[in-house]
Each structure stands twice: as structure tokens, then as C-alpha cells.
Length: 169
Image 1 (spheres, rainbow, N blue to C red):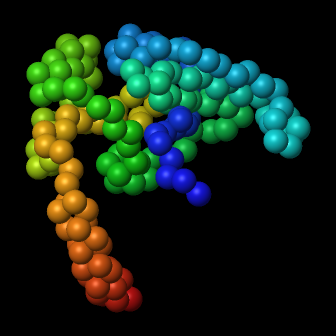
Image 2: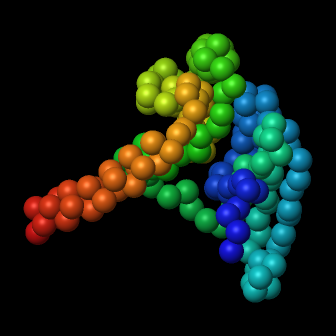
């Protein structure tokens, strides 16, 4: 298999399509480019009404949302849903990142950051569905040294992981 070139789309749940459309088109300035409305699952034919929207980013990639009225909104799972599961978008400059932060706060959104991650700086906020979003600005290019360091750190993590798991027993 060849390495994929980019993300075609990432899909998430929404519990209010109209609110999601407003946020992604008015706040994030994405373009609503497509929708599917089905009463049955295309794969199985089972009855399962849903509405599926697609928003295009500047590079042509897409973020999508499903609204399924028959599914209950799940309870948040703590840090898993509030910190680790998130969608990160690119800011083209630090000025753009600061402008986005100011605009989000002006619109009443709580924003964390600017957070310095060494190779990029970012801000964090939530969409109307509770999905954590990140806007990140790369401040230096990734290098082969970064790749080697990541491989080394992953091997070291395996040792630490085993120790952490052992301590839980």
C-alpha cells in the first residue's frame, strides 16, 4: 500500500446540525460543501435516519459530521474526550493564531493557550458538540533528527509503559 497523501475527511458526531453549520461556517470560515441525508444505512439497508454534512478546509480536505436523532448523546469520558480526542487545524502564522484566539474569545468561546509545544504553538477550544479543537502554527520544520528522536522515545516509552502497567496491578 502507498502512503496516503492527506486526510480525505474526518467524521464526528453532532447533536445539532444547524448549530454545527453556524460554527464551522461563521466562526472557522469553512465552506459547507456536501451533505447526505439517508433513512437507511447504505451498507446494510437497515433503517437508520441520519444527516451527514461536510465542511471543506483551504487545502481541500474535509471535516464531516453525522446527526443521528435516534442515538443518545454519550456522557463525556473525562480526559479522553476533553483533552486527548481532538481535531487540529493549521494556522499559517503566529499572527493568525493570535487573531483567531481574539476572534474566538470575542464570540464568547473559552480558549486555552497560546501553548508552546516547541515545534508548534497552538490554542485549544471546543465546538458546539463538545469536540476539542486545536489551531496550531508550525514554528520550525520537522527534520530527520526529529524522526529518529521519536523512534528512540517510542522504544523508551515501551519500557516505561510496562512499569506503569505493572504498578497498576
